Image (cartoon, rainbow, N blue to C red; front, side, top):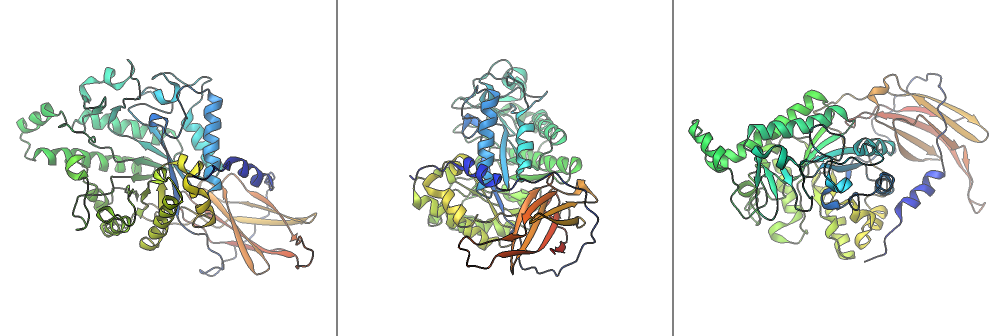
Length: 508
């Protein structure tokens, strides 16, 4: 394994080279409409990583760290994401009916403080911190919930646990796990309220569920009492169908609830990568439909999600679970043209061969999903620690240049107005300032820069409204002609990825 890269330090050096100055209110400049085709276009690709808090996989590194230690570790992960040109983080906020945020519905997580129900000291709200620090860096922050897991065996439950407070909806299964009973209306209400509480109170960009519906377990799920009640009340579904229907109802309810509250908040699902063995015919493996009672194909077919992240954790050449074969099948099921961004098992990388497999899977995704591709890496730790050289491979290859998150036109297809821009040459620099008539419709800016005939771009957070660029960049050898700043263009990007027309100004 190659030696880990110290990513955050590199970011400090890079960012220190150009510090945006306080904005100066510009004189309005009429937008100049350009042709649809430009000399440089920002690529569109979802580049994300899961940050797992269950069992302290990614963050915090262990329970009970001080507030400052927790913040420092979070900043290190986020800075690493920026250096790698990621544009989103999927942050686990509910690993086991607990909370890594201030909640009146569930106790503080054991994985945060080492004592379930105990708040951080000195007090802070970790989710507020993660949202703010992500947005400062131009990263989307998606909150990841486990909707049904009541207790993980590494979680050290106490009297604040749902096992004690709501025993009527909890079932004990094997290997020290406890689970909410998905068939119960009270379970659905409880988990729905938890999700919507976060949607309402935090400025998040997405809600995310993984593959844990009914549990991976060797025993029959202990739901005989509600099953008998269902039959006594005239229910006609078979038992497995009854379980699946309960999950189906919950998934659609969550999607509809999010859209009614904040239509721009995306709902993403990351199911087990195989729907059923034999679909497509060459595929063999675990049957989530019959074991987890997750009819993932239905949810995608019905469009009850905004992005789809099947966990395609197998190599390209593993024929019974081949990555491109499975991805191609899921693409054919995507009848509502939702964003398809499969999950990669980056943490499984052991050497350069594994890293190159990960690279190949990204390129296969681009081929099968040419419009708005993307991948989510499990997990951020593997990228930060450069497993098998994967970070270098990504930075030198598919993630060499920054990308915007692909749009979600079914949520909103109206681009923001173009920004108003001013350039003031002063002391050898171009002082660029911009503003927007509707700041609430701006999530990011893109600044395009032309020197000579070549164009480059920068993606900036919405709070940045100025930039200072040198008018001339002289060559180090003194022989090559200097690069002269010719034009700049600025666009506004909204919460669902729509980009405005470019406001273009010549530099004189």
